[in-house]
Length: 112
Length: 116
Image (spheres, helix red, strand yellow):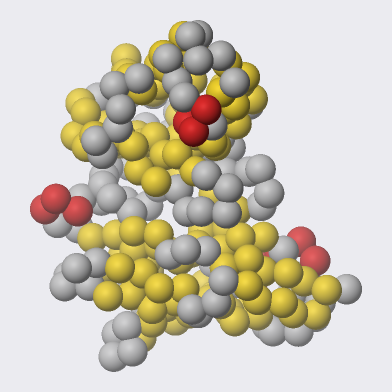
């Protein structure tokens, strides 16, 4: 089973809201990733967790806050977002950081 | 520096004809290479991967790719296109060392259109 699940599928939030995106995998992978994808563009890396520790933060604004409570779960907490943050947010996982990544279906986020 | 170039932003083919999506990479290190496909409003699906074993790699849905080190290329092919192949395809490179560990380097993507 090579499945990464993400919830919710769609999210609309105002600029003063706080919301969270959730990502889950049960493949025993120890690396998990958040990406942001704008229309007609490749995904852009935001964060990498390796063995539940944050190993890469690609200078993402602090209004995005990642959390990895355990090896199967990855959250992205959102607060005071801007309209330009509207995008498809993709989660991925891999056995370790050097292996191929498996992507979830994404959360389509709209900030109003 | 590491980079990936997909030479075509759009490719159109008729159903039943061959598909060729071109990818070149630039790297100081030995790469792992991947092709991913993304259907509209979906996540990315791994089609195939090259990780320094056989240079001709077979993937899912009849796709294959050949790693040519001398040409720094990793072109994706399929003998006969199907309507369901219409999607965005990304050529992706990763490296097994240092500060690049965990990072994927994406090409800009190639939109494949399949005509009936």
